[in-house]
Length: 491
Image (cartoon, rainbow, N blue to C red; front, side, top):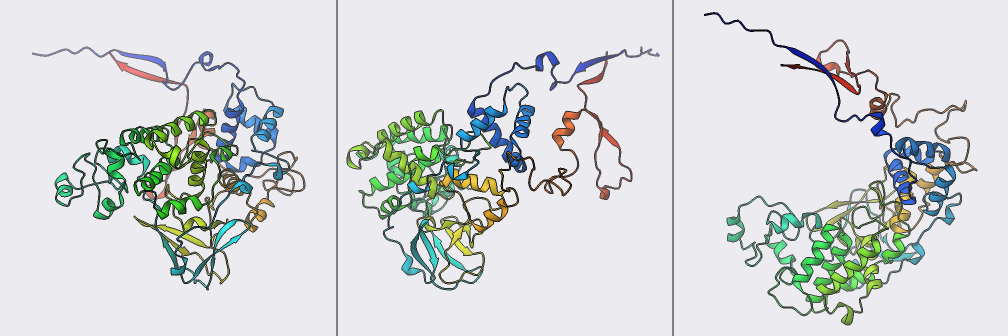
């Protein structure tokens, strides 16, 4: 028997790609951006393309409107917003700083007598550490431990699920039997610890995690609400302050660590927020430890303080903690923290864009080493920000987070490349990006080829480079972008 099969019918149709929109639908209505939206977009743009921070205002305005086609934005509005929000000033002395409002006191119980090569002093920056003897390059200067070991807020869910250590946050790989046999589990709440040392460090655990333990100084049930609030708002600083205070009250208010915490440099978070450069992902203000949205900060503070007082019923009466005190605690934590821990000795080291010490992180401590040969009498200095960042970004991060404008030799040298006698943003010449004939040259940090975004927006064919080691002798046109595609369907 022979079967006759009829040929399949081929239907060809033109369809739109999923990520393309009709012109009518894509045409957005014109909108007037708010000052916050403008600042967010400017700072994000500067973060993505640092060389654009030195554009003239008209060029910057065009760039913003190119990124946001629906925006109605004039040069005058842009200038006004940047001036009001400390993102530009013809005279940098008019920029908001708060270094003169930072206060500190002598730190009790410092173990400087144990260090043969370091001593404490006071200078125009506040407290400082200086080399009392010559320190060779690469030498361990000192090791420092946190005032209180604070569990990582971002791993609280894993800790609650017994997937991470209850104090250090290390992910756990052993089975439950291992922790039971080694007495590394909590019989009441199921929290696990990775080692006996971690369990010993978690002295506040029963007071904070066991509601059945009736304590006058700490309400475990209310603490868990405060903890959850901090986690939902990624409020590391409030959580850290709460954890330090919890350890203080359960020690019958006798802990030296709390006195050391109070002696560290402090300034109110309310003051610091005035210097915030942005609430967006491109912003630098407390980008790791705090909620930075200025529009909800006051409500966040009030609610956080209310939950804090419920968790610690005696805080207001016995320790005179009010909302202003609470915000000073938050500010103190933010300007002294390192990886969301407070290291009392390390907190005495001031900033330099050309640091002479470096830090290595251990599980329970940090170790400070010399990066270069340090002479006797030289101050120990660390970089508070990424030293590879552009000078403008470094100085903005320092002003926003620590309240001062860096005027070190390196910053002054790099600024001279961008600024001449007239301000670069209002001058006709883009200093540092021009050649002798006045034509703008491409930055050495950018390739001469178009960016991926430019390629995608152009809609033209382009060649994909094929590495020579793959054995292809010819380069071929590989991809063409269009808003429509032909599809063939068998019917």
